[in-house]
Image (cartoon, rainbow, N blue to C red; front, side, top):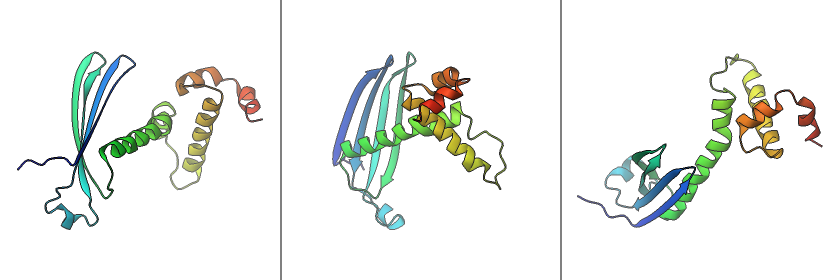
Length: 151
């Protein structure tokens, strides 16, 4: 049985020598799923394809949701989520090694270091750095510049 989407939205973009195409389809044919997930409104299919690092790629992901949104709204919510991921969580984990740091989990150290990492990212952005890696290299021995930026 094939299901027809109730709404479809597609975006196409080229940036950083990459081509991305995204198509999001919203379906309301839930079958027996609604008995397993109370409040379930729809399921969503996200297709991504294009050229990345000179090579073609294609991905398809499926989601269920208790939201009743249009395909464009779902796509925007997804992009907002990844914006947060790319601007905060990724730099903290990959560049500042938050997930791999060895800290005592029964103390306040993990929360304190997380605050310090977030503080550094905020200061770097406030000073106009688009890249946290560049900010780290530039500000490594510039503690006074960091404190002056707080005024």
